[in-house]
Length: 205
Ligand code: FE
Image 1 (cartoon, rainbow, N blue to C red):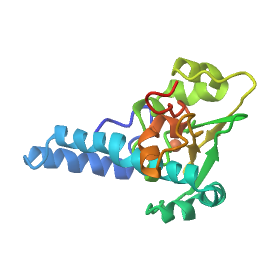
Image 2 (cartoon, helix red, strand yellow):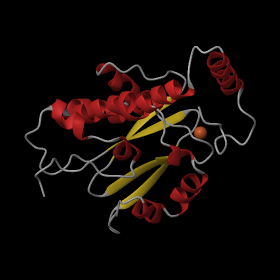
Image 3 (cartoon, rainbow, N blue to C red):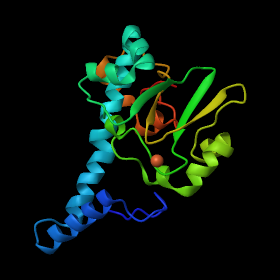
């Protein structure tokens, strides 16, 4: 597991220190390898985590009633798709529309809706992203490959220990006939952070 540099400026928290100590001990005893730990983290980042959020997004796209519940009471709504959101903080889902583009950050450290999106990508925890996305969101998004038209309002949501956000991206053109399961496969982690759009299905311009 990587160090907490660039996360909290303070020394590692008690939990982080204990986690590192435990990992070191298990590696020393030959019970675990750093590679194995990295693989688990990788799976959490790329498969387990974002897939949960993707299921929530796809349900919201096909079920307007669910979407309304999701936007007003996210934690109760995600429970309907089998996700038990952490009780230690609030969860809010913010909707992208043709008029509004939302993006999430934690300016203080790296708070992230891990219960729906898994572990945050490394860049989410980086100082440049955390500081710049608030000051010049359009520039940062453009650098990440997402051009937001001037007429679209960009809203940046600063997460905290008490409040986590997830973006409900726009349903892409060309996905009209797709099933909920097919839609789930289209949704990416970055789209739910708000630094990308959900691409149209293959074959659709
Ligand atoms: Fe944080």
